Image (cartoon, rainbow, N blue to C red; front, side):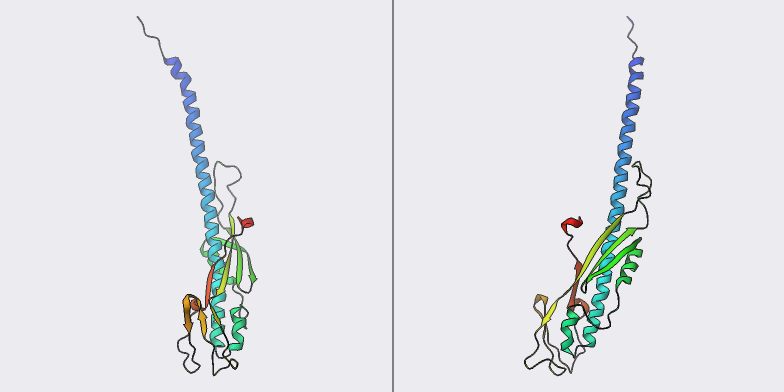
Length: 206
């Protein structure tokens, strides 16, 4: 008794096999494209964060320098801690510098107020070729806001503030600085006077 030939069934299954494999390959390439886009977006956000922080840190350092310069004139301290010191130069150049180091470019750098910076960046490189139409030349953008917060406060001494009697700096973590006008060799560092951090994203920014 002769066995039936199964070549016909195998021939019918082969196109189905090709279709299934092709579909799986397309899905694999699609997932890879999504991964490419996500990596590009993450790179943009990293660049934006670094750029905003760099601008804020430059402003912080300048404010700390202004405080050291005017340490014997406590009447100027309040303005300095509010971010409005005399002779402070723009700090966005640091944002451009850090964005470039992260392979991106600054589209916009704005001081939101004397103690914060908002920076928007765009990646230099596009997502690249993929099976997703329209993504090859697409670049990613992101924005971040960095905030400078004073870590210290002070109360003018009784009888007024002057070069002979300096206020005590009361800082976070219960840190106190007793300032002696006749011995100013050791003064707070910029990070002792001001904290710099990224602002929490707002709901409409997500």
